[in-house]
Image: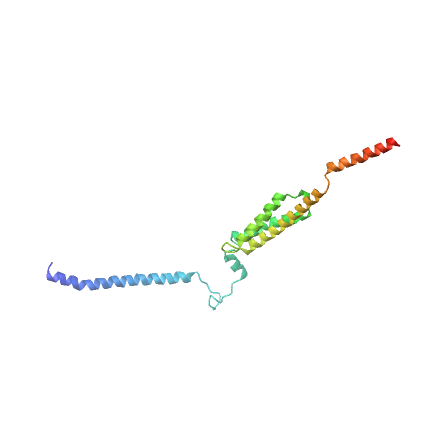
Length: 179
């Protein structure tokens, strides 16, 4: 290379690097401007107040809540109240017609899920409440069944009653024959 070409490249080098640095700064600035715009794009203000002091309605908070109306965390407990209501309606049934295994399963389900609802994230207190009521209803029903079985255990069986009645009739017949 000749001396003039080398001098030309040396003279042009700072200009090229300056253009690259300016272009990089321009594109970076444009990216930052776009980022700032996109962060503010979703915000709408209904008043001149700052967004932190803006009042949000109850329905909007429930809709956007992690346990709000559009999540399973809301609808699972709402539907599970049907089990609690069915258990409460079984209070009117006689204890001999209730299933101990079914009520024991409802009790254990209620106890296990009540504990689990306080461990999970987000904490679902609505589901914990319905499971607590389910456990209470199950405990009451299981105690009713247990009391029924205990009362049946203390009473003589129907076969024993029939034997005693037969013995009494035999005694009456013997007394009638003797007299």
